[in-house]
Image (cartoon, rainbow, N blue to C red; front, side, top):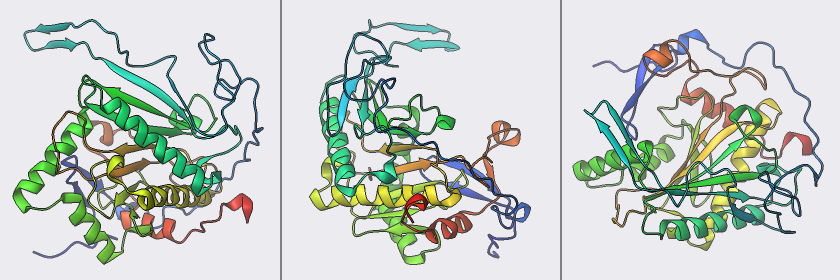
Length: 349
């Protein structure tokens, strides 16, 4: 069977984690960043904003609590949580067509820094290591509760991604049940382990490090790639080089390495179109349901929407809403673009 010319021929790529396909149409746009590149004026934020409900000493959004004068990271239970811990048990099942079940959980907010003006690329590796340590602590505490079976740590960066506040922060939602996407990933990785006798993402990481076609950057402990099956134009996947199931399995050097690779990747993102790059980022780690989950391999997804400039975005519309996801720029082209960028943020050069 002849091979595929990834740069010329329409083709589909398979995502083994979610068992879904993406249509790639490289002939539509040979160079996805051609055309006018619109630059935006960077918003200059103050180090402290008296109106910000996440800044130290300020009243929070609900008005019932005041932030302490914190000097590092700061965690609190979300005042407008999507999940609540004290929820009565209930269920509806009307012939299988109308089903609903109550869901308990705990939602927290993690402020990465007291400085309102900073973004992730502005934080030092030491400050990001502190964030990683807090993530690990929260994963252990929340996941250790008997009614919490999954802990989802994530960050929405930028108003375009739904961030309601520009203060550097992320969120943690912990669920009574394992959410849909981690459930699918668990099944996929378990099936791969049963069939091949090895970890899916260990094998995939080794393949990407050998071929280096989609490698963006790496350090001793982590590799960043544009995954072969990427849907979003500059989507990336952060992969642990060692087989670890969660943050709790990382040693001290690996935790520092994770902070470093996050800084390097997000700096590249900002340099791509010389703007504070919007994205949704999420850590995927093994469920906290009491099972061993030997199949699980720690990784982080970054889903940024920008396509050609700071103001031209990718939207999922038409065929993508009704058929399956589609992209024009290949994963290889996107990786080359990101890999060529400086790791010094554009405003500092």
